[in-house]
Length: 292
Image (cartoon, rainbow, N blue to C red):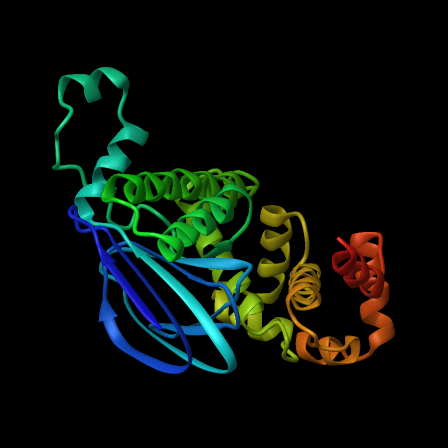
């Protein structure tokens, strides 16, 4: 099942549910990519990212990428592509003072290409609520362009907040005086996070993560902890536990199957870590969901 909606202002929304598909390398406008079940793989240069339902991928205008789906279960995907003029206008409203916006309300010469760090971001909170409502509108009826554009506007607002939380604020935690150095370090750290999130169920080691981030092992350990408040290993455990919560909520996999899927070697270790992080065992967590 495939859906494509091109608005009058050239904003575009597409969705598809497939088990196997390949989308050759192409260039798009600034876009947000999401999956609501299963996972899809994105190739951006030498970066190979696996996208899951608890995250979304932001791609800047002009980025070349390809993607594919190879799954035993249907993968439901959604893509939002923003027209350059719409994004540029949004960028102006975020960066210009009110007098400038009033004196020159229709300036379309602002450029916003590349102003966000393209990476995987958490799909939760207001962003998830807004996108799910948009998705429901598109599936249940045919809303007019005005309503859809309002949803897209709020998507950018929510993304802007996430960007500042995940990038701007995190860069301030780094102990470097030069702003450009902070941004460069954080960019490399996001590559490390991407690698962990995409390979969380494999036996990855510190050297692999450091090489992906183009940082020495000790530089990675020091700066990762500064930026995110946890070590790479702690982040790996968090990703695994978060993935297990999704599987406990949305699938019928047994506990032992989930342990294997998310990359733990023994159930007892998984149960202990899950309870430490959530104050409840995975079995009771699933039982509570079934009762509610």
